[in-house]
View 1 (cartoon, rainbow, N blue to C red):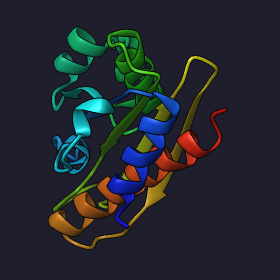
View 2 (cartoon, rainbow, N blue to C red):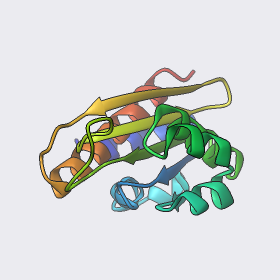
View 3 (cartoon, helix red, strand yellow):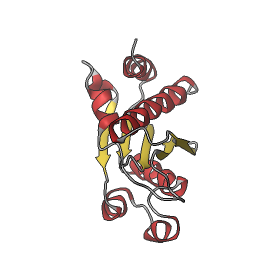
View 4 (cartoon, rainbow, N blue to C red):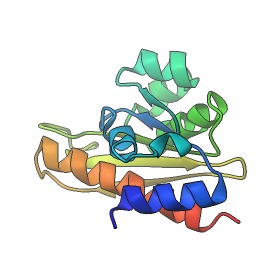
Length: 158
C-alpha cells in the first residue's frame, strides 16, 4: 500500500484533515494525496508558495524571518506549516522548502530541503540533505519524505 493510501486510511479512521504548504515541491505532496479516490475525506487544502511574498501573504511567514535566515531554513518551514494550519480547517499541516537544483551554494547546497509538520499541539521541523540528485529526484524525495512525516504524525495521534 502506498504512503498516500496509508495516510488516507488512517486520516479517515481518525477524522483528520490535512493541509500542505509547498515551495520546492510545487504541489507534489498535495497531488500525491489527491490522486486517490476518496481523498476529499482527508485533504483540506494546499498552498503552493514558491515566492517569499506568497509565503508572507498566504501563510503569514514573517518577513523578518525570511530576511534573517532565508526561505530554505527550518524557521521558515516551521512558520509555513504553522501558517497552513492556522489558515485552514486541517488538524495536520506539512511544509516543504528547499533547493531542488540545479545549483545551490556552499551554505545551502542543492538537495537541502527543510520540512515542517504542525498540529494544534506542536510544530516540528527538520532538514534532509538529499544531495545533488537532480531536480526531479530531489523533488520526488522531498514529496515522499513529507508524506512519511504526515503518516508518522497520524500514527502518533489518539
